[in-house]
Length: 304
Image (tube, rainbow, N blue to C red):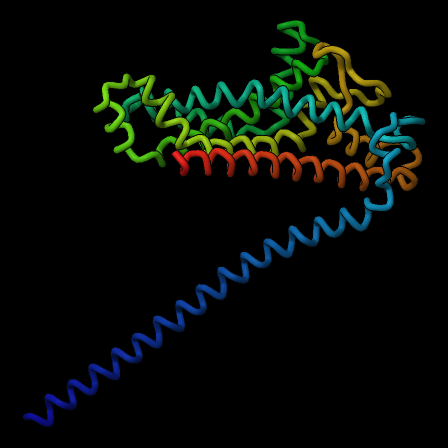
């Protein structure tokens, strides 16, 4: 009987060892698969960036960045397209960021869980899934024709702002949810009102994460072609806009035109790659500045 008990214990120990080895093997396989996928994504990104840099670096020069385009954009620089892109990104953020943040504050801090909140969130998710070309058609119908803005920086910025709005709302809402309720309760305990709590406690803590929504929005609107095609982009405009009611060139549309039209496509191909490299660089610089801003406010919150 005693020997039987010992054998059962030995069998149990062997089974446990096999189970542990099986778990470790499965864990190693899972981690290896996840690591392979992660490194593959990085490798694809590096390959794309390397391709654009190799192809476009030869076209980059000070004249290319600072001069006006010539001969139907097949020669000269892309300065008006750079300035036009910056105008559109800035205009869209001035529209989308405050409205998106206020909408997220309303949804997270004021609306109670229920049908209304679910309905608003559903509509926001649906808005983020609408193709950009539909935003372009809507912007043309509303801003260009109905409101009479015409093909202008204002119409293009508002259209891109609508495109970026769902991203800002969802990221801001998640940032507000991440703020622990103890901060709110402590503020209420000190006699602060709800609006004072949101302004002085919740927003300063959540703001570094709110910047993430702005970063993602900048990345999306800076490379869109369809919305600006219907609302602002000019084919060839070798001058800088002097008003928000004027047309402007933009890097995405400029890249599209010189890559797909004209009789000297092969001759203009280096300009296309150079334009793509400049566009990627602008997005990278904007992201770095936004990340620096996020880090600054994050350190400020920690110090307080």
